[in-house]
Image 1 (cartoon, rainbow over the protein chains, first blue to last red):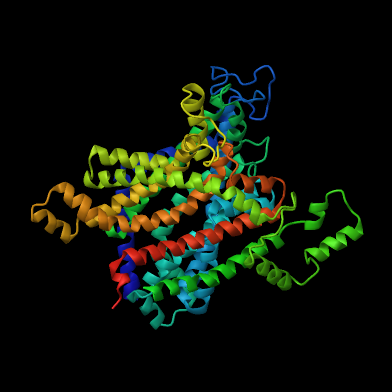
Image 2 (image 1 turned 90 degrees about the horizontal axis):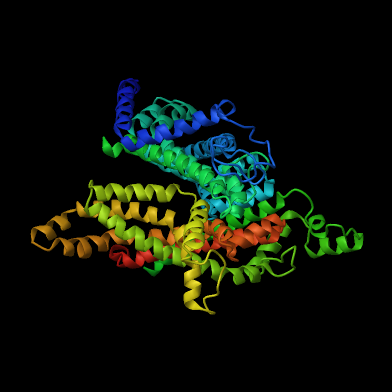
Length: 289
Length: 315
């Protein structure tokens, strides 16, 4: 067990080095700040909102931004600022839940395929190749259409569409790690496969998966906004940035604020996750050690 | 070389078979009876029995699958449940529009992404590099349906520089067609341009630090000659194959772009089909895109074999 003991003394230091590199990376730090900003908006939406996000008012239809309506009002007089706050909940939840679904299916499949190889690997890999041939947005649209339009189904569809990436990534990492001496050692002393996979392989393949998950949150948020924009995600009157843009495109000239703010919010939060992902990659990449 | 290419094509066959099963299964998963969806108010049992017979709905699922695959292999993708038109015909009619859009977007992405990547690599860690990286990151993060709305507001409505939306067939008026598609193609190109920039940059950085570049510099060649002739040639190879693969992403991205700019292409076809619950069309479009994507993959690998002398002449 000296190998395991060694690994345990080395691991915290390496993790710490990764963390300090992450803090020193200014881009990643900006990313963290932007993401946290939106998380705060989403969590505290009920307290930060100035109006009821559902309350329409026919006396204040399509009003430009003012002291009363910070970011203006929409086509039936609802406050855009308040809807934006509640929309942040849908967007962030969609990003996190769909990536969680993709991780929950993809990582175990990748671990099994990579570790056992042979027929299992062949079968999993062929299915993944077939799924990867369908562009993920088109797959998500087809799935969302099959399941019926709702935020939950959109998250499910995006999650399934994102799964193949994680299977392939995990499988590739396992193939690289499985020949390492400590895995051979664990196998030599007769540990059961499940223990070897969970204790020795999973921790060592996790870094690239974390990086990919962060970047996939960014694409999942865009995908949810896209599905909602097409009417296949969050259903009215519930606010979502994508569906806000969908109605806004009909009032481009009369009420540009209706498009500018929800789209800007998507752009910023996605940019935040992408910067965080880039920073994580630089900090965790073993080639930088 | 031919052996390698043949093997590459053979490997795609199991993928295609599984793909067809997935897409067929997706259709089987649909809630409700397709005939009922198709018939709406009509409920004459004789008509329904005739249609069930016609679409082989009472056969065992494997028989249905084989019949479907047999039809697809003969180019018959089924008929639209709404219009009754053959799906293949509908797709082929819309395809040139989207291919024009995606091709223009790819040309723009290459014209922006590759030079920007070269510049960023050559001027590594300078302001220029940082700006190029920041623009690329923004290009990857901006939702293209939002960028489309903003550009229409600025370029078409305020400045009246370009037409706001619509489509003009390229055979009818070449320049007007290109002009109308300039804005949508740019919107579609941003993510791919960003991707190409990043890959070109890292490929160039890899090549620039290699021995033969040091030799070229050491024998006193001009910096321009070293970069453009010695480095670019080698860095470009993976970029060309990558571009082929990214073409699939452009076809998928076109779904939203076509929606914003009201272009009657492939993407609009699938969205309309989804909303009219025309599953035969959805299924056909998904299958068609996937086959196209696999073909692009094979093409990318073949291109790689052809341009790579080590694979072209195996010993």
